[in-house]
Length: 427
Image (cartoon, rainbow, N blue to C red; front, side, top):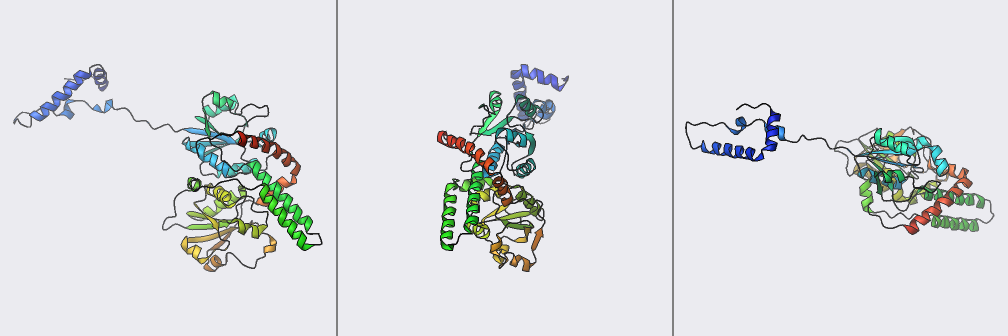
C-alpha cells in the first residue's frame, strides 16, 4: 500500500481513530505470532507504519513574561529594592522606568538625587534587566501602548500604597482598566519621606551642637547635647522589623569557589547612593567574589558623630545585599580587618576607596588596615564618584524650607495610609 504523504495519514487518522487502533492491534499480534512460526516473516511495526513523529505536538519555547515597574527612586532604600525584587518574581524579565526630574518636581517637589544618580542606583540592583530613563509619572494611554508594543510588556506593577496625581486620580487607572496591572506589597518601615525626616532631624541636632560649643558651661552644654541627641533619635526611630526570611530573599545564597579570588571592602554604606554602587562595581572587578563588611551603628557613631548612622545596621545591610556587584555581606563587621578575618573568609585582597567619611576628631591613632597592609594584600582604588552620605544630606539641609514643606504633605498622606491600611498577602 502506497501513502500519498504524511499529511494524508494525519488527516485520515483524525477521522478514523478506530481504524488506526485496529491497525495497531493487528500489527502487535502479528509481531507476537511470528515468534512462534518459523519461515514466516511479517513486516515489523517501524516499517509497516510511516514516521509517527508527525503527530507529536511541536514543542515551543515558553513565552517569557516581561513586567514593568516605575518610580522616582529618590534616596534609594531597601524598600525600593524589595519592591523591585517582588516585581521580578511576577515575571521573567523586569523593566524599570525611572521618572524624570521634571515630572518629580511637578508631582512631588524637587528630587534629592538627579536622574544620573537614580539611574545608577536602579541599574545596580540585581533583579533589574532593563531601565527606561525619563519615564512619565502617570501611565498615560500613549505611554502604556508604547510599553505593550515597543517594550513587549505583559504587566505593569505597583505597590499596594495609593499613587495619586495632583488632581486626585489614580496614576495606574488605565493599566487597571486594561487588565494588565498587578500589585505587590509595600515594604513597611521605610520611605524616602522618612529618610528626609531623619536627615532634617539630624541637621537640627548638628546645628544645636555647633551653637552649644560657644556656651560657657561645658557640663551643662554636654547634657543638653545628649538630650537633643536622644530626642532626635526618638523622633525618627526606625520602625523596620528585620526578619531572617528577608535577608535570605536578598542574599545570593552562594559562597566563593575553592579557587576564587575574594575581594573585601568595608564601610558604613549609610543612605545608599551612586557613589556606593560605583565603588562596589570597581571592587568586584578585582576578583571573583565580593565580600562587603557593613559597620555596626556604634562604630559609625564613634567615627562620625552621634547623629550617624541615619539608617540602622539591618537597613544598610539590605541595601548593600541588593546590589548586583555584591556576593556576600558581613552584618556588623569590625572596624579593624584582622588576620583571623582574612583567614576565615580566604580574602585575597582588601580594598578601600579614595573617598570616605570619618570625623577628624577620631584621628589616625590606629590603622584598621594594618594587618592586610603587612600581608601585602591591601589596595587603594580610585572612587569613581565623590558623592558621600554627608553631601547628600547637605542638599536637603541647604533647601531646608522646601523639604520641610514637602515632607509635611507626604507625612500626612503616609499617616493616613497606615491608619487605613489592611493586611495584604505577599512578601
